[in-house]
Figure 1 (cartoon, one colour):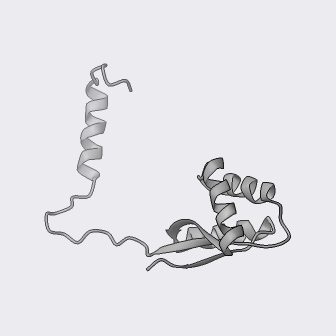
Figure 2 (cartoon, one colour; figure 1 turned 45 degrees about the vertical axis):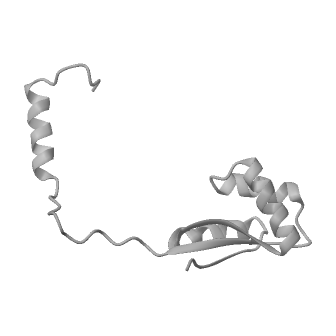
Length: 111
C-alpha cells in the first residue's frame, strides 16, 4: 500500500493486530546471539584458469569482477586468499559449491 494513501478501517485493524502480535523486547533483555563467523578461503591450484576462477567467484558470491580478480591474483601469488566471512552453514555451502566448480576452498573459524 502506498504511504501517501490513508489506511481504511479494515487496514487499520490489521495493522493493530500485527502490532499486538509482535513480540515485545524488554529493555535490558538479552540480545539474540549471532552465529560465529567463518572464513571462506580460496586456494591456488595449477589446474584452473584465472578466467574460470574469476567467473566462479562472481557467480557464487556477492563479489564483483574487480574484487574477484584481486582475490584470484592474491591466491595465485601467496597460495590462498580470503574470499569472505559468513556463518558456518553458509561457509559450508560455499565450500561445496566451489568444490563442484573444481576449485579448492576451505573454511575456518574467524577469530
